[in-house]
Image (cartoon, rainbow, N blue to C red; front, top):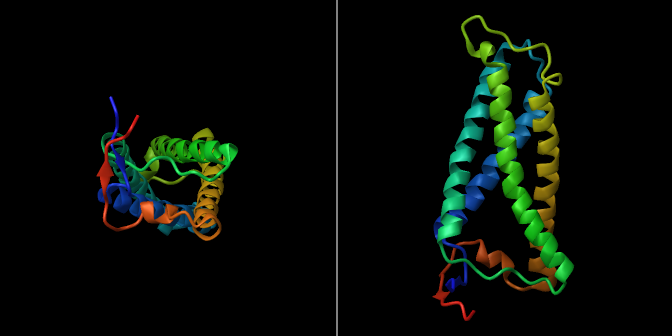
Length: 183
């Protein structure tokens, strides 16, 4: 069965891409620069943590929608960089972004489950999260995700400014055309 090829990604997919990107960057900033710096005895930390967790669950719902739409709609052919190695690296990076985001959500949810007593009346956070294996995994994955996002942005800028191949337009707002795949 041949698959249709689109000039751009489906508009809902474009919106999800940018919304998820903003949500993830915001959640990572809260994690790295607010929650990490705030002592667990600070009474405000639990409220910020609840918002952080709610944001993570919202990203989960958006990611599920994104996967469903991405697998059921026409999309552009894979981008060409002119280098088979870079093309392969792009494929690995895109898959890794999906996998690590889902693993981040899973380890965040698991950490929330481990500390669930903190959310009860008179509950308290543990002295430190760093002793929790689920949190350790969450922190490592956050660093890996930050590196992958940086690489993704650098690659997009390389396509836009060096290769000038219109790659950025595929994940932006604009007229979309669909043609049958010749394969």
